[in-house]
Image (cartoon, rainbow, N blue to C red; front, side, top):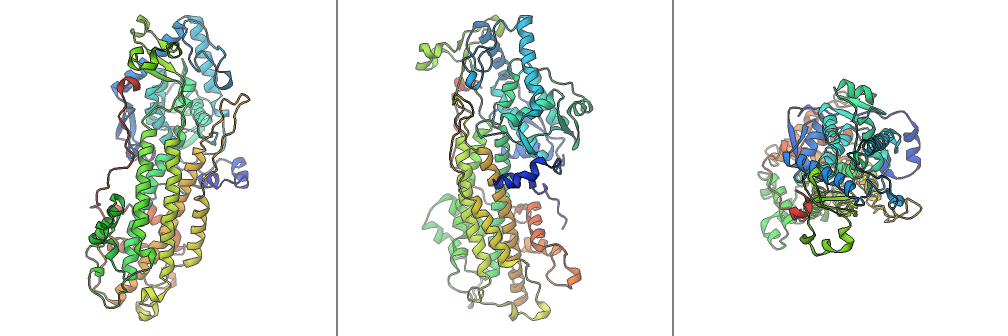
Length: 609
């Protein structure tokens, strides 16, 4: 079976998430990391961005497989109306954060005066914004993001969310063009405290105006050359394009979207390796049975038990066996409970990420069409100072532009750490499942009971490797200490969600979990093969049978030392499950329950949809 890994190992990501200064020392000052370009296998597919229904699957199609993007008609109109209200606010003298008032501790300083339609004011805006974009490549710190898919995920998410902001038409189009032409900016991995990925998105802005470096179809070159080869002119920014692009958590959200996709792969394999372990242990399936599950109704626990039971349908475990013990060790009996709980936490994380990437995280908030009579507080003197009346120049559209804290990503951040804990508890049962195969009290069968001529090679690494992987996971599962440190001398920016650190740690946990599941796969497969050697008529269920057969194509059960792979079997098993979706062996997956966190439908008047 030929495997095509969907991504290269995330070396730079892992270095970042370990958290110690020493692990950064070499990476930050070394040459550019090995770049992992995407395989644009979906280049003929186009995703339409609306601002409110982008899915994780669509992000993956764009980020990982090169799908193209366009904006819906409504999204384009929303951006046009928002920019029109912004410029009208300047004409009417309405104070607007980052347009005519400074940012951070300069928020009370007037930084722009005059009608934006007048040549002098327009030139000031263009000059200010161009200078902001030109500084982009100097922002942040290394190591550089080594995976093209991460930067592309960030750009498609920003393009989707930006439909609620005030981009100039040329900025909105340039972001789409970079994705569609596959011009991928060189982006630094450091520069976010979790409240906004300012420096990282500024790197993207540098590429837009031809500064710094970028990759064109996976080849690194000066950004100006990449734009030229893609047939693009450098951006001429206007309005508040600099803050519109960079005031967002899009980099962190992109990592979270990738986390959701990768975690689903891990949870899928945890269910399948569990089914294989049950076969290998000659286990009792009574904990998974419907009578047991009905005594404890819980949609995710019951769903996972049914799913594993469906994987085992047709297995010899449903035949009576006098040597089968009445109750397995806790780790095998309770695996579906830990795994169902992890799925429940995953669903909550998924919904939180969907919410985050389909709603505005920008300051200020622009609300076209909102009137003083739409909510009692809007007619108060405090709110009326941010009311834009509108004129013929913006089509007589009125609304509010107001400062806010929508940049705080805590609905998503909390779910990331909750998932870490759920995943850590899942890996405990996986670890102990592997250990229990060393005890003949549970297995009853011993490897020595099988004639040597029929006995395959036991997995290498065993308990020591399993323990090492488990230790890494448990260290990463410790929550990141909550804190807030002022980032300016007037304590304006005094919160940090640390979302970037948290999501990178979570992705590393998932990656190590995949290594652990590779060990579990080897262990379960070894004991399934022993059971088959014991009785050649045994079957294990379509999914475990299929996974075992596929694994044996790359790690044979028997053979001479020369015929076995020279590489570590643990590495081969990890690469196998990374590259092989569980749907390869279990296509008729049981439908998942609805997520526990539902995305609310907001009042259209307040969201400018």
